Image (cartoon, rainbow, N blue to C red; front, top):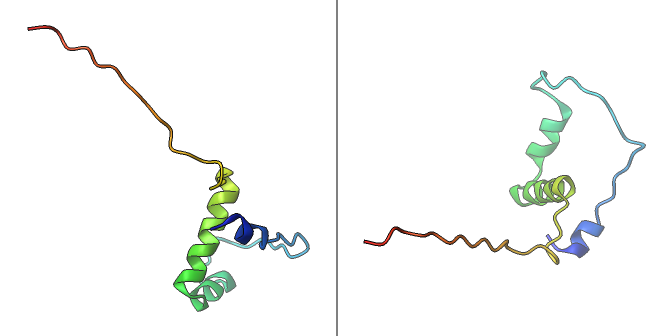
Amino acid sequence: MTNKQSESFRFNSSVFSVVNLNNEDTEDKTYWLQKSPRDRLIALEYLRQVMYGYDPNTTRLQRVFEIAKFPSS
């Protein structure tokens, strides 16, 4: 997801409800089953970025070097 895509998401705090998570037949389940797999993955990626603070423009692979010394024969 690009930065431009993440800017298009806005959290609407006026729409909030508390639900019982043990109830399997929820409106949320119905809502997400109606969405395409692509839409679900976009939403999942957004939640992951919000949770872990991921920014694809600044995140890089961490370089880890380890020097292993073997006993001389």
